[in-house]
Length: 69
Image (tube, rainbow, N blue to C red; front, side, top):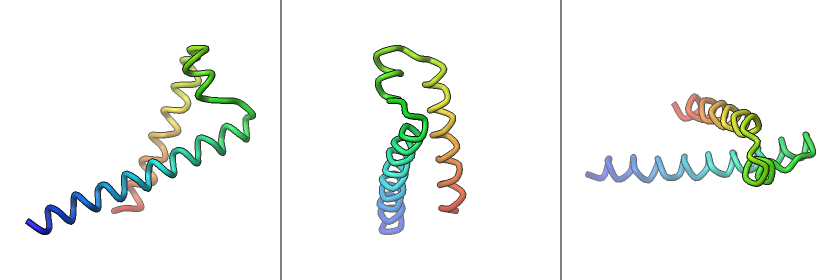
């Protein structure tokens, strides 16, 4: 039972770290390209930018998963 609880806690820690990494990377990429991703995707319905952001998030997820293993 304690191993399962430990795995659940570990999963939440890794997911929190991943979310922090994602938020920081989106802000850094947004600063590099001098654009506001949230505004363009939400208000202007820019589907192409949303797909690019999703690909970036998937790439970061793959990198974090490889580090965790």
